[in-house]
Length: 171
Image (cartoon, rainbow, N blue to C red; front, side, top):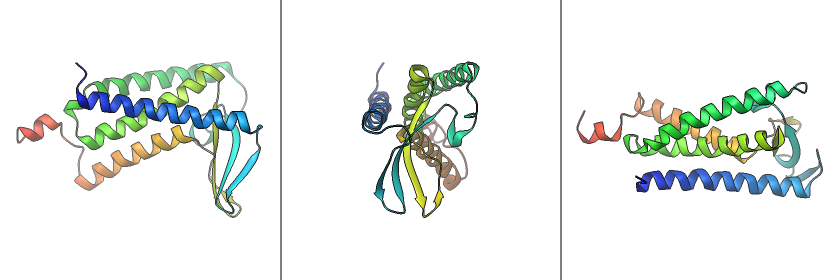
């Protein structure tokens, strides 16, 4: 029932979740809201911010319980789809399984925050001089890296990877 690949995926998902929660906890306990710590002058700051919306500050304007409820609902639905896909990891190539695990771990970290706090703590502030990217967190990074790996894999092969069983059968 729990194949080695399923267990690897589960440990990666839980590892990303744990690392994301730990980093957010560190920021939440050591920095006040909007406090800044310079890490690499001119390039990287740690800035505690709270994002009630989604990526890139979308839906962050205005306070609304409905928004939080909808974001949690959509996030849980996405997590359900990802879990179903990961359950069938044996039928997927390694890159797809790894990508889905990264995305799932990040999504789990952010949905946990939304359920518990109604918002997500962001803290990584990359910039070049005065030009700042949106502040984000480790969960966001895992989601983006997973999605980019999946897209890159599709672009490099010219198609989505066939299931591993089809490869072995020569289909």
